[in-house]
Length: 157
Length: 77
Image (tube, rainbow over all chains, first blue to last red):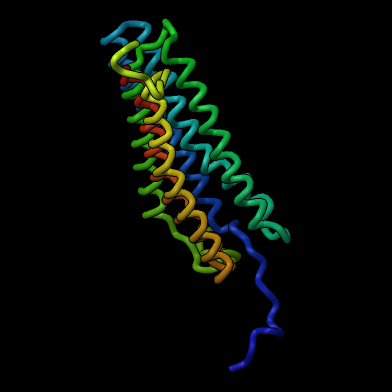
C-alpha cells in the first residue's frame, strides 16, 4: 500500500449541502404561512385581535429562529474551500446559534407581560412552529439526494 | 430572639432555575453533535457536505428542546 504523503489533501467544502438547506428554508416558509393562518384563525376566535396578533408573532418567532440555523450554514458555506473553512464554519453557525437564543430569551421576557399578547396562544404557536420546522427538516433530509463526495455534481443537477 | 434563624435567603423567581436547567440539556447535546461533526470532517474532509446536513438535523432537534423549555415562560406563572 502506498502512503498518502504525496496525495494532496482535498479542500473541505460543504457546497453539496446547499440545495438541501435552500429547500429546508423554502418549505419552512410554506409551513410557517400555514401555521400562521390556522393559528391566526384559532387565536381570533379565542381572544379576538389579541389572539390573532399573538399567533402571528409566535409563529414568526418560531420559524425565524429555527430557520436561522439553516441560513447560518448557507452563509458559512460561502467560505467553502478557503484555508480556515472549518473554523469559520463553526464560528458562524455556533455564533448565530448563541445570538439567536439570547435574542429569543429577551423577546420572551419582553413579550410575556405585554398587554397585546395572549401568552397561551403565543406558546402554542411557538410549539407548533418549532415542531412544524422539525417535520420539514426530517422530510427534506430524508428525501434529499446527496453525493458521498462534496465536490461532485449529481446527474440532473 | 427568634426560635429559628435564617442562615440563607433566596429571592426572586424559582423559574429562573428552570431556564438554567433547560439550557443544560441542549448545551450538552449541541456540544456532542458539533464535536462529532468536527471529528468526522477531520477524518474525511470530502464528506463535509453530508456531515453538515446530519449535523443540522441534530442541532435542530436539540434546539427545539431549548426553544420549548424557554417558551414555557409564557404559560408557567
